[in-house]
Length: 295
Image (cartoon, rainbow, N blue to C red):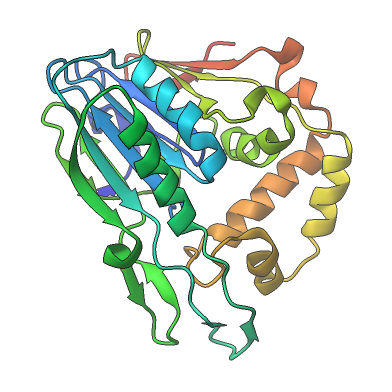
């Protein structure tokens, strides 16, 4: 499934998109679709309360956010004796011994990020007091293929959940559907690792009860502009090698996205210009289905 928002955005399903290290819990009375994409070594987690239809998804990237992230997700779903449905999608067998680019250039073997992340997620689910019914386990070897150069790649890198039924389908999103506030949300992924307030937690993004996006604040040091400027001098192949956990598996727009992030940081070195008084950036849906900045 391809999620695309053209000029007639009002005709598109009401959806919520989740970036890396974000989560969102949605009410089927307000949201039709919820999903994520751009996953390589990351893993998407879906948890659904079948009694209420409330659905929480996240895009996890490292093991240190798993336990805290699951608590955030479950906190909005409530507890129930009936098992919640769970879907785990993403990650692949990224411990390949070679990575060869079309140019013929090789670099060191990938370390393998997917396996420890998947293990941590399964462990945390097992330890939870809430019971779960594992509906989908499309990770690691079952989500791995190879390209013509022998590089391992994920088969599925994105998905969407139909909130009314709980059905999960492979999906990709175009740039206009990864909204609102795409670049700022991408930047939060990079800088939140250095912000103590976000340690061990998923990034708060969506207000379930108000159907609004509240992009919680994150800060960055002034030297991030200098770092961004330096990174922007790298060639495309160097960007992949230095900025990706899976350089041979990234989608074609990966480098472009990195350069758009760096451009923003160069032009906005002071984080307070983006998050005045460390307040969230709030967006609400308008009557035509678009997102409008409220504060």
